[in-house]
Length: 414
Ligand SMILES: Cc1cc2nc3c(=O)[nH]c(=O)nc-3n(C[C@H](O)[C@H](O)[C@H](O)COP(=O)(O)OP(=O)(O)OC[C@H]3O[C@@H](n4cnc5c(N)ncnc54)[C@H](O)[C@@H]3O)c2cc1C
Image 1 (cartoon, helix red, strand yellow):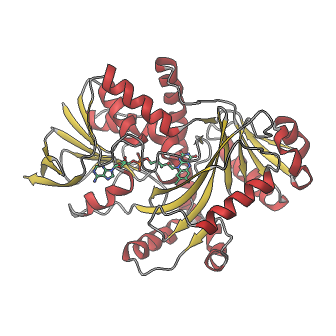
Image 2: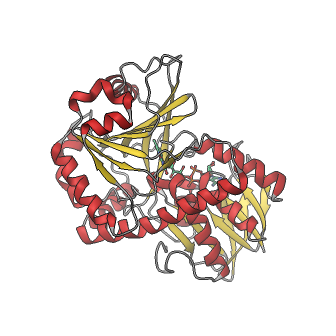
Image 3: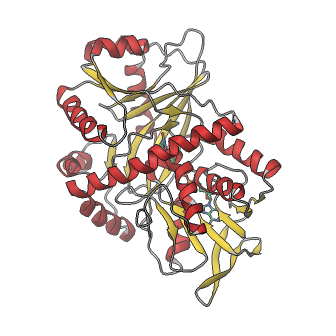
């Protein structure tokens, strides 16, 4: 079957890869000039298969007043009269029920753990060069109460296939000596050995190279999809800035752009951009930087080693739909890095970046059919697109084929 995938971020490329391996005749269209140039460009680099608990959680309700008033909060809510944000927020509040958060965690874990399996299989097969590491992830706690919360969450997840262990402060430092400078503040940690990391943009480039040279996939860059022509409940063509593109099936996998394409067709996927920031430091022989993936739970900042670089990411700014670099937010992130790793000794000032997470109120991506017979969606992966891309692509391909998949059919439907 001839399939057109819209979007060449990590989700679109993973979808194209899974479709091409299934034997479909695949093309990818993207408004940008190169693959992986939007949110997949410089994310936190965490393949965080076991850390999928949704943002919507009963505990966030108590924190809302602080987010609204503090400029230094890792999560900031900017009050705007954007109707899309109001609608998104109402659904978010509904998803904050304990039962919903628990069910969502279980569903996302199924997808996350399947993604790990597929990512490792793909690496066996392709040996892609993207600074992929399987060293595990260490969550570091500076507060007993937060550590107790993590212990409870670990207990809940233990029965769901997650292998995690609690570490004392001393064990955290033995495992990751780069934390030595903050040793007095560490109260303990949680180590998850099965977590990976890698450079999402580099994987996008590798997928693009493999798809175009070995899997026969065609690419149309600088070609924005502006809408669709529909006929009798089906898509007849994608209308692009460069003319019409026709296929037997179409997959919307264009990150935050999916909201407009689907709402123009009368559907509401409730995908809203949640802004975040990253810094990428080039390390020197004198740098004292973590080897493992580390999460500073106190500041909600993640650190990942990418060869001789260190990627640092954080912040969730709700209500700012732009990728403009706001100096105050960058300064806050830089000061947190300086405080955490005072002997980082980077070669030069870090590369600064901001991106928009394609987030749904309940943190669950949409993978499957839409109201139009030959239009499919793989989108709304929020803070976990890199992590969940491999399994989401496999599930979508199974759904297109009408097969059973690793996750039950009702999960992740529009
Ligand atoms: C600060 C930050 C840190 C993050 N850290 C992590 C992490 O550590 N681990 C993790 O798993 N995830 C992380 N994420 C989330 C992850 O980066 C995203 O979920 C993922 O990149 C989304 O991929 P995507 O392919 O859906 O979208 P994108 O990467 O945004 O790709 C969408 C593509 O569609 C194209 N497009 C859009 N509209 C159109 C149109 N109309 N026509 C044609 N083309 C179109 C765009 O040009 C783009 O190339 C982070 C995100 C941020 C912002």
